[in-house]
Length: 93
Image 1 (cartoon, rainbow, N blue to C red):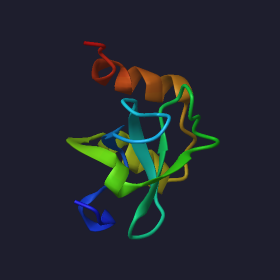
Image 2 (cartoon, one colour):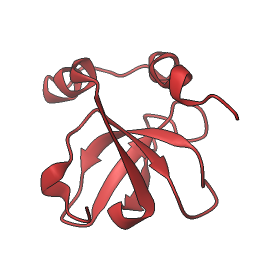
Image 3 (cartoon, rainbow, N blue to C red):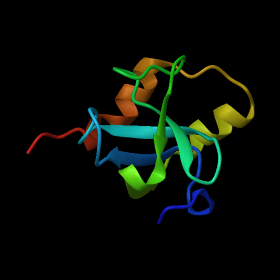
């Protein structure tokens, strides 16, 4: 999957390349066909999301509809809230 038509805002993804390899993020914006903006509430805050190519991501099926709804309504997102949502995905093996 290397196009954004299969992705949604609020979807959980994991980086498979770059300095952030292995980190889990939430998609907060779909920029174009190959790029998305991601945040994790820790290193990448909601105020400064990371621009990343889709081909460098592992896509999870989990989508947080509440994130999608908040972004569509232009409501503020809280970094602590994002961290709390991603906590189950950050288990170190």
